[in-house]
Amino acid sequence: MSTRMTQLFITALTSLPDGTLSLLAPAGAVDTDRAQATVEALHQAGLSCELMPRALARHRYLAGTASARLEDLHAAWQHPGVQAVWCLRGGYGSAQLLRGIDWSRIGQAPLIGYSDITVLLEAFRRHGRPAIHAPVATEAVLDCNSPDANRQRARSLASLAPVLAGEPGGWALRHVAGPKTPLEGMLVGGNLTTLASIAGTPAALTLERPGILLLEDVGEAEYRLERSFYQLLNSLDTEQLQAVCLGSFERCQLANGPSSLEAIFREWLEPLGIALYADAPIGHGADNHAWPYGRPATLSAEGLCWSADNGTAHE
Image 1 (cartoon, helix red, strand yellow):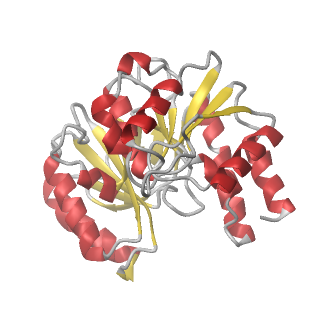
Image 2: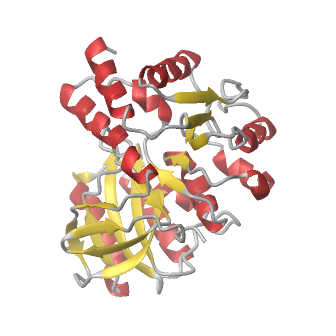
């Protein structure tokens, strides 16, 4: 990455609050050079960080065995000044840890990540722990090979600070179908394929109260996205599902672009009276803004707004 782009990302990171960041690899194997560059970028931004002992381990395509990754997960909250636990990357493997988590060892510092980390974000919500859907840590050193995209990524990194601080926030969204009346619900969701893969298991996304479902994906064919959405939708209590908000579907094979996917989702949601919105700035591209998993929010034709964290969102 060029010096200019490095500085752009470092400047975005300086807005993060004081405290140690524990860097964790609960899923796919992490490139050693990239991890070390991430640590250096955080240090240059004036941030304290601790790379978990087994974060650079390898077992097949995973960041070590499930037991080793679980040990790091438990250790990540042990630093007395930990501000947040930031996943280095997604990939595959997070769900392998769920049965072994000792929740008494997981503190109240939030877990940060997306993609495969989606399964952990949902587990944290169900166990009363804070979580944030946001770029993974190594994206702070990945050049998007475009000045505009790099600026987008810098804004995405910077969006993490107000969410970590518990501030209210939101985005303008585009209404696609269904009710336009204002509605309320907790923010849940993440990667569509990952959520579909755990439907019907103890790790499955659940809606025990009204929810607003945010979805994104990468590298999937149109029919696979419909298959995943149909499976996910039929695993949920649709009486509690208030709306679906679509982010980006990067490098997905869509016959007519995003409109293809919107038509598919609309077909399944309209008969249920569930609202469909689009243009959420989340996904596997440079535009991947942070949002507080499980936080209460309101949604209307004017957009999505989440509340400040008053300490009750994760109870």
